Length: 375
Ligand SMILES: Cc1cc2nc3c(=O)[nH]c(=O)nc-3n(C[C@H](O)[C@H](O)[C@H](O)COP(=O)(O)OP(=O)(O)OC[C@H]3O[C@@H](n4cnc5c(N)ncnc54)[C@H](O)[C@@H]3O)c2cc1C
Image 1: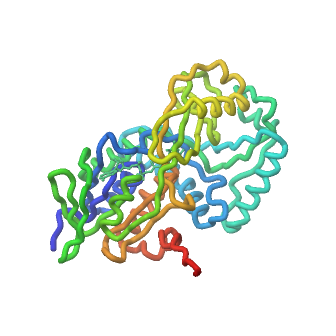
Image 2: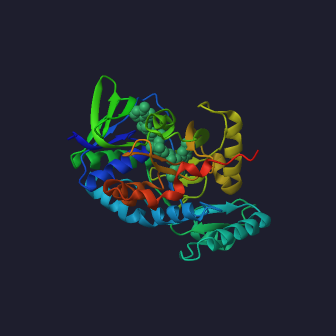
Image 3: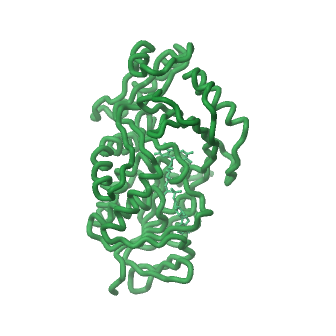
């Protein structure tokens, strides 16, 4: 049966927009359907780090994925900016993880050493640096007395996540993709003659393939195509200061200065279900830690606090799976969609476009969570 589209991407957030952009670059006819403004949208409220260092401890496949994605980011950003005509404010000057005592520093050194040892074939990209080197790296910042040192990942960086999302959608549209916003998908059906019918609002669309990439909305959509994935929300709160003079030339875990000068302070990890409230307790904890690292932040005015929900899998690694019950349906879920955007628009979209993905991403299938119960 001839279909109007080759692929329908359900959800045009951080993952769907990246894959949609990648698919259209591969010459596929793509429809992206995105939900309502009231949906949970991590794409619009995240921290903006492109971060590999320390990711995937005990999970070499996820470690490799993150490192390769970070490695690919400079080329991805340049290409995206050229194709969308929109600057995304990406910088790759490295990323810091501050250690606030000698013990924290030696624990971190051991952890990073073990992390590198998991993937000996990948060049070492992270090293420990002492306070003196930190002071040279951050000449405009007065470090708190407890700061002992840091780990420094050379592949890490940051980006303006709102511009990233807008640029991926704009580049997708420029290449002739179709994006329908405010179109919550309510049904995905495998057709008898092959292909899928997807219903969103009052409209139906058909395609040979379908990708479910609707963030937390995927839990309801996946089972429609035999992809019942175990995901849960995890709340992250963060704070934003007024604009400050240049202070942090490179981002840190939980602390980054944006191109506009505001400093973002984060991020909590809270198991509170679908609760988007902010709390004063979190604000106090985040502010206290930030001031311990950079005492001058105590003089800055806080202008915003918000909460958003991560899309978490049981082991924190992504889920990429093809449906056996409904051939042609796939699902993509992750909690580091900014970092992995280069992969989603690159190798992942290529594999999806050419139908070569099944074996390549086997490790990330959600079947890994099916534990046999011993009687
Ligand atoms: C506080 C916080 C900080 C973070 N910081 C970072 C960071 O520094 N670096 C990093 O790499 N990642 C970070 N993340 C994670 C990152 O934001 C997510 O991994 C990413 O947004 C996930 O993309 P997604 O497309 O799966 O989901 P989302 O970005 O949430 O997009 C899902 C989309 O699907 C749509 N949708 C839902 N249901 C339907 C439906 N039925 N029909 C049609 N459309 C639907 C929604 O409208 C939405 O647009 C952070 C997340 C949080 C919460």
